[in-house]
Length: 213
Image (cartoon, rainbow, N blue to C red; front, side, top):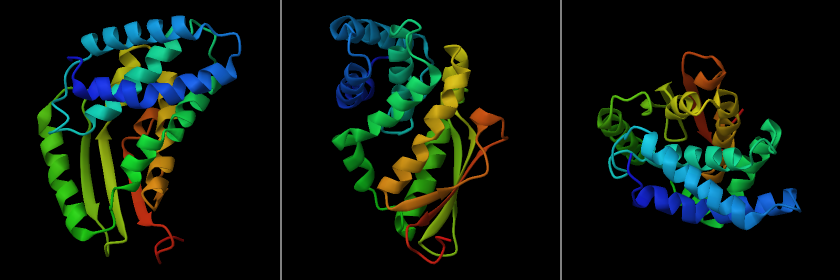
């Protein structure tokens, strides 16, 4: 994979919030060294990860790049970061105002929008047959205030295997609840691929709707 504009934007948007958290959690940290080491790790990880198509065809490229960023910082800590610390760092990323805005600007509870997403999923699925790509489908609900997304394959799980960080991937799955909350929704699911399920099943309904029970 090339270090495209997508990967560069992910670094610019997310890393300041992450490094602010790191400085608060580890008071004696050499922040300058950590940033350099993390960025070196990030670039190297991008180079060894298979391409899954441009972000214009596959928006999940941004998710894969985010995973590489988090793993790169974890590696740069050279054993000083516990698994729980990693989880806290990932959650702290949601404090990024730009990240929050990107989700709050989405309007998922609209039939036209959901149908467009169905088509985007088909394009993204065909962008790459690599295990680092996702295989997804969107199923319309009984009305505009609910829908279901099924993930039959997870690129972050493949990245976790490549980087020998399989145990960290479930911490990334927890972000889904926060992101859907930003969009005004509620997420309910029975399992994830990262925790051994056959698929990640996302039932999503509008917050406060009749389906929010």
